[in-house]
Length: 340
Image (cartoon, rainbow, N blue to C red; front, side, top):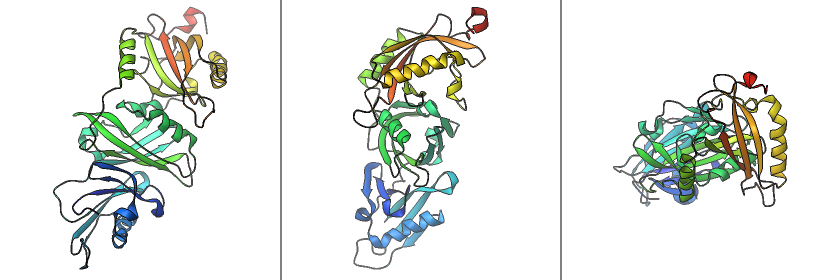
């Protein structure tokens, strides 16, 4: 191992699965822990994990390069006192550990809870819990977003996922690596780490395709785009921000968003898209407004070419919502218009 360098060890699963995610701010994607840390030093990491307290030792005299060096292991404690990772260094250095935060994500309710102080005040947005599409609120670019969402939804026992994204922090764009494993007892519960690797991996601005979409949307102020999960008909991500006045965020149960009389049309559209229909339209779709009443919109649905497995039905669809004139400013008065 490199003396004086901070290692970030993930402890998201059983000890035999632990790995190294980063050296300093340089990513190491699930790098074998036993190949990077001498076996005689591994108990220090295990002790920090078990005690949930920092462990500091002066190592014994030996023929190894780390003889008589100072070793320090600092646990990253998350929700429920679970240790998600350990910062570990042998020897002296003048750098701080990479900024890192722990999180727990449960797929059933798509609740993301982040323990963020380890990332520093630059990432403090005044909240710790996000639900559903809110999880992408500060994401500028995440090329692996669909793969991430599909992996979380499928929840294959013993699964893991790692990727990078550009996020908006108070000082500007930052590159964040996310790594997660699901719970062996409950595969739909995921524990993870967010790691600031900006000093080694420059953040990326929006892709050409995303910039093109922004241009399209800016020219059509009543147009809104969303990626929707076709299995449970849930909004995964708003491409250009949510529809103004739509009651979509927080604790809202998404099945209550459409007007009850429109549900059969939505489920029929879902079946058609999963059966291979290339595009379909839902006219005069009523969606719940924040102040009561209904927003009136037309929706065009197109399957996205991503499935859990080859030849499987499309797991996602792109929905193009177009608000009827004036609906962005006020809720649709269903009773007055005679379509309740």
